[in-house]
Image (tube, rainbow, N blue to C red; front, side, top):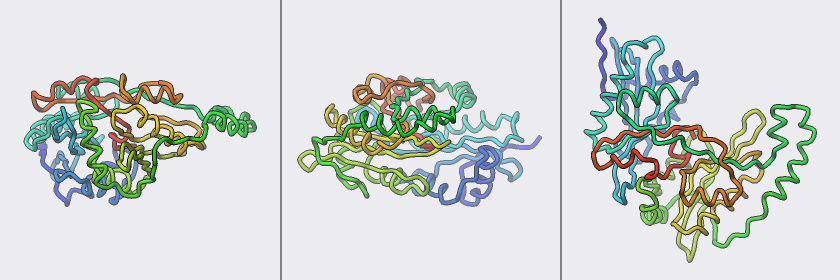
Length: 342
């Protein structure tokens, strides 16, 4: 019987990892994206990768995005599970189970206190089975229909002739935003974002430390996607920011509120939403995620977004007794930007 060896990543593994990624996900990933995703991150523990090797061939891979998070107002390291993959030709050998068992051991050694992820249904089932992880909830998605005819026409082609009516609907729906606070387009996040992150550390029991170097890496230095960051200021002090992007698929333009954060004052969140809606006013549909019973959910409802569905499962596993409380979704602040696919 061939021996499976699970070990830490080394630089010479990259060609095999990229080949495995393409085989599993049917998508070729550039080395540039891999470099951004795993090497250029602001956390020194990255790249955090385990591989499963059989006779020199990599047949399995599991990795974490390791970042700082405020947990009870104190900085800790947490890991987002990304790019878990097993060669289809190696299934039935227990690769997934062995990788996850080693993941718990090695992550704990590195001082990572909690693991979380947004797995596909089968991966979710196996992650819970093999690690005793908890399914916290399916994260609610909120949407605002800007151009209903365009959305219908994507499925019923004859309706395309009526698409100009959408512009009237959108103009009525999206009023010009009258800002109460100074707003700026952010080309580079500075120390003001570090200070904002600190002031927002008690917004939830657990949330990523959205400091300047993280935001610059995550959004402004992304090699393939374009994001726009808007900040609001009160008395020359940064009070919040919002990150938006647009995508186009099947002739439908989707606007996404990727990330937002502000001090716990409703009018700051309302201001950010108003700016985001203006930024995405030409989109056919606007969408985002929000956790239940939060200030962001309340403001989204006020802004005309409605709960459409809850498609993304949030699963977590504590690596210390102190983080058992994070098995409850009520303790989390999550946005789409917390996921590597957005």
